[in-house]
Length: 479
Image 1 (cartoon, rainbow, N blue to C red):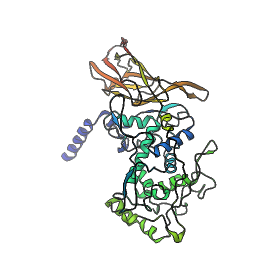
Image 2: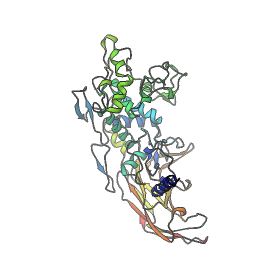
Image 3: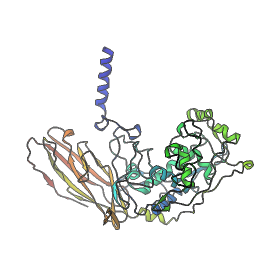
């Protein structure tokens, strides 16, 4: 009994030591102790053309040649690491001239997000909450690695990946490249390790979703009659309509949508890609995919036993190149634009809260006086300061967003567009977390790319015992 009480006391003390947002944690470990970030993102109006062009450029590393500093002075790195090449025993170091096959990246993005940067509530060409999965994967590539909220506020890199499709895709390509480069030390090698061969990416694709047994093609929980690849809802593909998305492994889904392109508005998202899946009727391939070989690799990093050939002349098996043409390098500057962030509002405010939980508030507007998309980060110095859009639920605290230049028509509803998008932010106080007496804190709104200066709004919070409002606003911020 004493030990039980002691254990309960220790558990209570441990819970009390957690940050406030973590005390009622219901999210996966990948989200971090403070839980998911809330980002806004712009959703391209012509998603097919815009995102296909961005994927092609990101796959060649055309957006960023190295790390850069944000206007606030934080260094971020979205640069392309290049690809290793060659078989086990003759692996060559990463070369930036070797691209990730765009056909593979397109299919991964479709499987991950259906070509959506923002949530399904956001119209094409509009701005709204970024697409976020239960495990805190964000945006087009469902970027999860490096996105844990461990400090209560996002890093500049996290905010960029969560708010802007170019940075999200650049990071998705970096992640896939890292999975490729993990061979041969930590992953098997398919074929000769040729980055140009679509078939040789089998293990990197598998690893993008996790090198788990659930993605093993010979997992007995998978129906053997499902066919070698996912039909991607193409009515002419084998397996349709008897098998669904969940019946296939991750590589089968990605390769399947390469072979059977999805459609949007009656138009295919890309041209079909020719390739061959692993031939399990070949003894070398069958041995490579044995459960024991997977166990040796997944748990002990002894992966040579899973290497399998993608060239088998006696079976007519040969690798296929990605037919995607080279990207136009000039497109990188167009998709990044020349944003300039301008923040307008008070430099400081005194906000009262009342016993019923109501709070005074102050409004700040964030504009892009430059072009295209201006991503920004929102930080607060105290958990009792809330930042959200007017009309948002009080449970939402915005961590980052975008402002769009006036040269771009932004869709508000099916019948309404505006010239650009101005992000309007409401700052108020959460009385349930507000200290007694007078408390002080600050809000920072920081441009992440392009030009503009960080803005600071000093907040003084007062707990009032009456229902009267005596808000004091100190003007002085206009950038």
